[in-house]
Amino acid sequence: MVGGTAAVVATDVDCRDDAPYWAKYREDAAKFGLTEAIAAYSTRLKITPTRVWTTPTG
Image 1 (cartoon, rainbow, N blue to C red):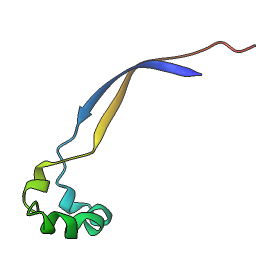
Image 2 (image 1 turned 90 degrees about the vertical axis):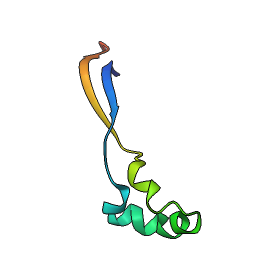
Image 3 (image 1 turned 180 degrees about the vertical axis):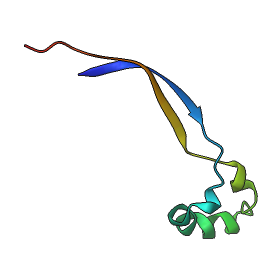
Image 4 (image 1 turned 120 degrees about the vertical axis):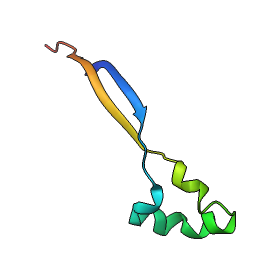
């Protein structure tokens, strides 16, 4: 088992630049009038381990 601490930060990404994501959500965004607003919405996180340790086995 691995454990540790990490810093988790949302990244600034315009989802419209991600072709697979935008292909999936373009129609819904347009239907609800969110085409421009979605540029500021990101589901991406940057996870940076700050300390890692393992559980002894054996």
